[in-house]
Image 1 (cartoon, rainbow, N blue to C red):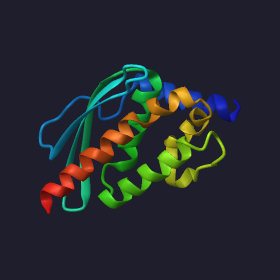
Image 2 (cartoon, rainbow, N blue to C red; image 1 turned 60 degrees about the vertical axis):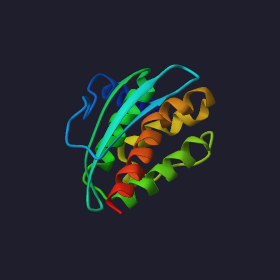
Image 3 (tube, rainbow, N blue to C red; image 1 turned 30 degrees about the vertical axis):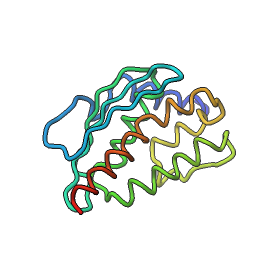
Length: 147
């Protein structure tokens, strides 16, 4: 199996078995994002305790890339700090806008590395970023409430 096939398998696995899917109560912020170019939609909730993201839940409709990217993102960020989440958002955004020129750190990105190939297809970049953008907005709203 070559690397592209492995990445495709990761994306399809997360699309079929969406981690943390289904909106849960006990959240500090909820946002709804839409990708106008393809119609993907996502409602995302985040719960923050101090500086720690204790839960992310979501409900969405859309392509395999938007759904899988959100699933991978939740695995990466639940249990981590809000600062780490915002840093990783910025790094993921940079990778997605690189058109394949940035090779991400696998230790840092884990399964999210599978989306590096998506960055070569500008029409699909917004799909991969949908959940990440929603998480950024929800995290900023949740932390603003605490201050």
